[in-house]
Length: 219
Image (cartoon, rainbow, N blue to C red; front, side):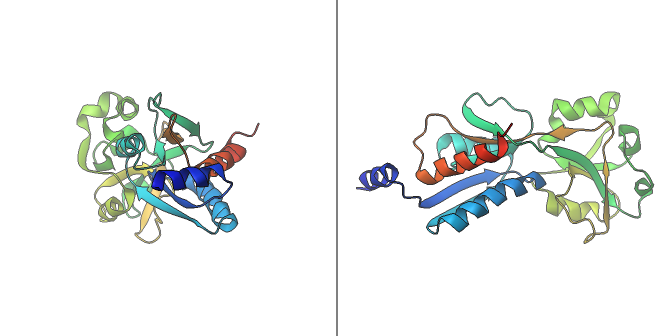
């Protein structure tokens, strides 16, 4: 009966039900949330579940069907998914207590950071992107903590000893007396929306995809 009911709903134009979306943290998701807000205003019988997590975990959940969509960051092979790249990229910044000498700099380089304990993403620290950024300094990096989400780690950075490397605009630096400085050379990551290939989708999922494509694939 459940299968028949689902087929009846899909064969009609009725847009209802729940959409499960997993995502990493990025300010760029504000544009996606604007689309979701439009759907909520247009369709009174819909609900959205948001799951915060890192890319490997979200990919696995989209693959096994427990998430309808994932929004992941970073350059990754995505042959097993349908995908759409958002136009806005994430730029990596160093976050640290505003009383530290680093606050006098407009940008920070590997040489600037090499003597400081570093807090970073569990994934970005081991990536080739960061290994290349540190260059021949990589083996000297003092990595004291890793995290999958930014806020709690920023409380450690606010103590005035360690430097957190994270995407910009994730933390309200004013609350914790932090400052943010861009890394130099500049490092960025894409934001990519993924969903399972050849999967049966609800009308709600199809509407979400249509609106994403309207907004993000315009010439």
